[in-house]
Image 1 (cartoon, helix red, strand yellow):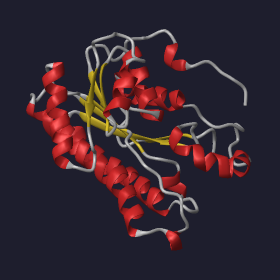
Image 2 (spheres, one colour; image 1 turned 135 degrees about the horizontal axis):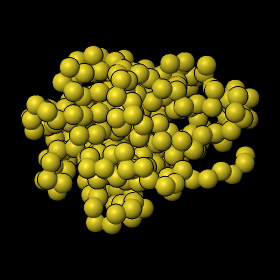
Image 3 (cartoon, one colour; image 1 turned 45 degrees about the vertical axis):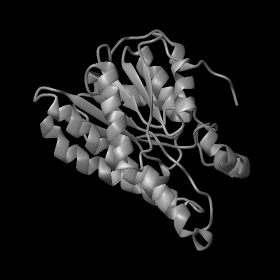
Image 4 (tube, one colour; image 1 turned 60 degrees about the horizontal axis):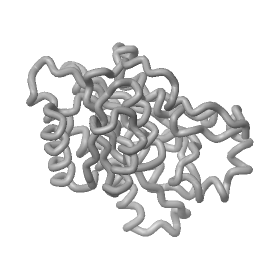
Length: 262
């Protein structure tokens, strides 16, 4: 696979200057890349993760030392989400107006071998977590004033559209995120909060590492570009959807897959 430049270090355009952006799952993978790109674009970033140490490590990778904050958040628990949102507002002086729902898990097992605990973990983190954080974020932002504009990007998956063997809980949860995105978009657009989602394909992250080892050869045949994606390639699309450059996009589901799943 040919090496290419890390786009998180390109020249900033500061399209998000003055905005506060909260990222769930910011301690690794796509979430960490989103934090890096959003910070590069001028946003003050609130890095949240169930692993606070991982979130703090992400802080060390962001430009603007001391400007960004790390907060522990378990997206499955309403109180944890509400406490984290309040902490973000207290530390930043205002509620976040940008949100990236990136926290996620995946369980690999045939449907006949998938136990209830694994199923519920995928649904609770990937789908219920997206609901709880979006609801809390929108409520907080709207309470701040009628003129508060916001934008949300949910990280779904191409597997939520196509399905995939051995990923029943994951694909069901990500399909739910796609539907939830469109419902939230329809309800919140009139309140000046745009909601869109991104459908990544096979991206080089810690979460996909085990799957890639087992399936890389077969999957490469299905990706027209012939390679896996990089987290920053997803993050660049996220930054675009959060910015005013996408001001007429509502309820869109943008595929970032190298052509997989077309």
